[in-house]
Length: 257
Image 1: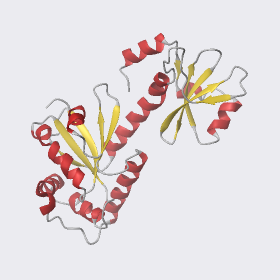
Image 2: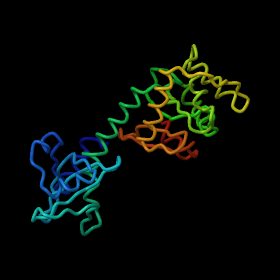
Image 3: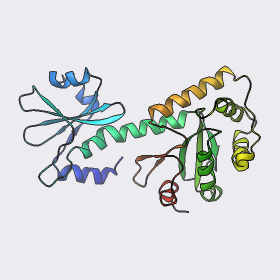
Image 4: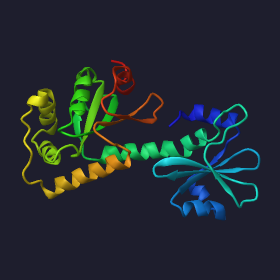
């Protein structure tokens, strides 16, 4: 999600001009491009490429894919295109046409998911984390984040999932149905291994649905383990951190202390 001015300059520098998905699909796609779509790719935009090639940006399994239609319109090259200086000519159009919209879409989906807030609503920086009540690394990140959360600079939003132990989902249900989920979560995390959080015996259907949706969202976003941390960098681009971050990466996620 590049800054619009920076992106415009970089596109101009390499001679790339893009056509959005709406205008693109008003056209008839070439048969060779349709053949790629038939294999599961979703073409979302078109961009100019050198030497008679026509570039198309596509999504495939949540990743950006550059397609290059040859001059005869009958063949498609897939992958990264480099110039004589080794400059990647595929990165900028994929960033604009695939990753920027995808990042905004995924951020909006996390906003609408069921999460527990940790920190002030007025905090200027929001960080989402997929969290398991039995996860020691989630607890580690909770402790790492205290200076930023307690100073009002960051709000952590815990999207609860149950993936580690058999009772993880039931413990998440206990937190979500607590009178004050924020207070219950912070009490559980501050106690660490001494936590007395009890697993719910019978999870209500609506809470089970929320937890299933959270887990599906985590999977769609490529979260492989907890904590799966998502944040916006200084350029507004969606970034991911798997596991509790090392100290040198912590400030990138949290911002200035």
